[in-house]
Amino acid sequence: MTYPPGRFSPRLSRFSLRTRLLLLTAALLLTGLTLISAVVSDRLERYQIGRLDSQLRSLTMLLSRVPETGPPEMEGALARPDLLDPGLDLFGTAYLVYLNADGTVARSVHTPRLDPATLPPPDALRKIPAGGKAADLRAADGSARWRAAAHPAVGWTGTVIAATPRTEVDATIDRLRTSSLVSGSVLLALLTAAGWFALGRGLRPLRRIEHTAAAIADGDLTRRVPGIAPPGTEIGHLAASLNGMLGQLERAFADRAASEERMRTFLSDVSHELRTPLFGIKGTTDLYRMGALPDRAGVDEAMRRIGHEATRLTALTEDLLLLARLDESPEGQLDPAPMDLRTLAGDARHDLRALDPSRPVELTGPDGVGPPGPAPVHADESRLRQVVVNLVGNAAAHTPPGTPVRIGVGTAGGRAVLEVADEGPGMTAEQSGHVFDRFYRTDRSRNHAGGANAGLGLAIARSLARAHGGDVELRTALGEGACFRLTLPVPTQD
Image (cartoon, rainbow, N blue to C red; front, side, top):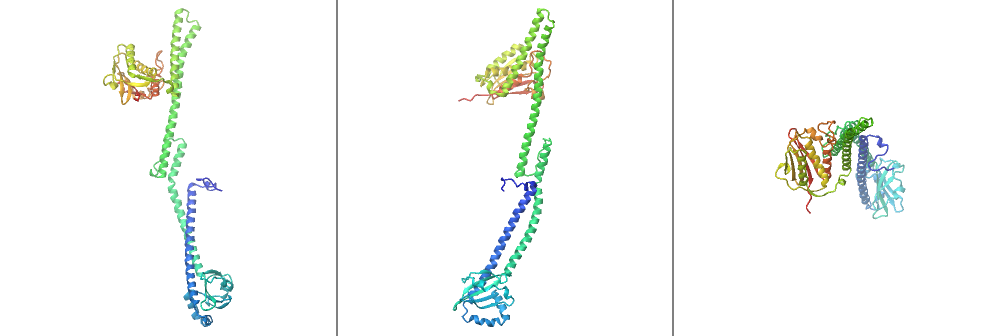
């Protein structure tokens, strides 16, 4: 049964990665040692057999040229064993046979050390090809293997056969295989033991990653994978990727927690801002129902308060709806057209003077440098006017009467700029970091007078600016005033 790439069989999957890698490595090593041993044994066997075949062919070619009277003369040699053994050993042959043309044995000579029962039988000798190609034979009693070669006789009709046992060759091959088996087993055991420790050391970084992941799973999102390997290695890349992922997860959880906290604060503030005018309306109507307003003047004053609270409630509801629409589809709330921010800057100057005639208002370029300059934009004028009104109202509401205000307009850094800067008390770094939050007021007072800002003006201003592709920025310090800066992209010239 086959398994998908990258997956082990169910039996192997029960083992640890270290064990699986070791088993795989040991199997590959065993296969390699087996192949090497088989190749070496085969090459040695071929070499030994080739050497025997060369000796046998040389001897049969030499004896095939002996005169016809050669075979009978072998009787003298048979009578001298002391000469026969050294002679056969000299030629590396243990058995010589002369066959007649009909296949019968004319003469045969073998070393006296051999038992005739261990010689190849005549029937097997007759099957040897006479072309000089050697062949393997079995002994008559099956105890050993022989290597034999035959050659046709010259000058008389017959065949000369030389044979020698393969005992020495087979013993050499067996010794080689035994030594290969023993040495291979020892080498495999040593390399397996070394591989076990090497894999343990190599997988140590993964165990540290595992411990880090376990700590993170227990809730410690601040944990990171330490520098356990050089950055260019696979483990180094893995650690860097995991740390990046963990950083994103930590930020995501922190953002979610912050979002939930903002949502709770938002709901609390919305509930308070909606409850205040509703309680005012309900209290006034309760007074009227209980007969506490007997004259016409009291009724008129009650109606005026109800109208005021209803107007405040309507404005708050419209601001919340606008913020919701801007969050969902910012561009869908705009009707852009070509315009210049100088128009809004001039109107803002008149508004400030109308609110506080004693307040000095200066119209300059960006950062107070030079006269007002052109600031062309492609934007929704009514929405930008709402932004500027909020910035002007913020300056008027949070600075003492008569505090100078500067309105700068023009282009800077390739963007159109309109800024409202005052010389009021300014804000701390903590206050400036939250000033654009919804329902945020620097004094955090909930007992503001009727009609006071609910803390949505600057949030709406920034959302409208970002819907136009721009932003509203704040530069302030305690005792140094505040400068709200509206920046928008300048239209490209076709």
